[in-house]
Image (cartoon, rainbow, N blue to C red):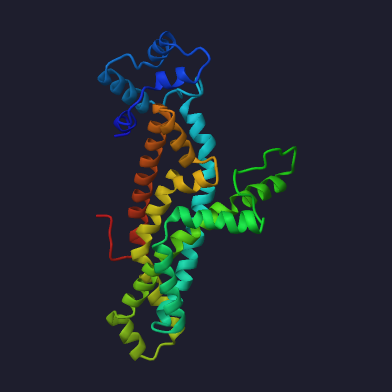
Length: 303
């Protein structure tokens, strides 16, 4: 799939590069096809791709020749991990707190407000939420920069100043991801807590007169967390793919923006390399989830 998907987009990478080059000509395009191996049959290209992939080589970028794809991915990956991992952990933590509060106050004003707001946010297009955040906090209030990961002109700064600039520019992308992901997670965690409270062992604990705090922290929270654990691990696995809409809106130089630019420029090796990294990260996080789950729930074994 990594190999075939980029080639289903149509267009010729050699023609695209030649058309954007001062030396653009049919002869130059033919030279590029020979240089990139695009003049060979699709089967030869495929087996060449598999051979290089097994050696950990993602190839050379067409549009940034002769820069290796691995170098481009390693340059973009930290920016994506910063905003996606940070927003995932923040939204999950907030969803846990507010989902639990909404469940404990089921039918009350807080529960009604939280659930109603969550469903409203979930039904709102993500890109619209991101653009509203840019308009309010970036344009009207001018609290945060509206685009990019670092200032356009940044001289020599200390490590602390560099870190401050990084998070200052990442604030709006992180906020937009938190807002859109918090709603769904909060509703799910609220449902999990409500479901746990109907279990017989919690009814028995309440009948025994155990303190409400003991019931919550010793029994309810742990078991309510278990169904959400797999979802959290999957979210962390998909973190490498980034949020393409977010990175496009904020011109943030992560994997999502890299993939989109590569698709538009027909840069097959970059698309293939990014998709391979995404697949590996998802498989790895699923594997780790399977290893960790038995420690969280003794009823599950690795047998």
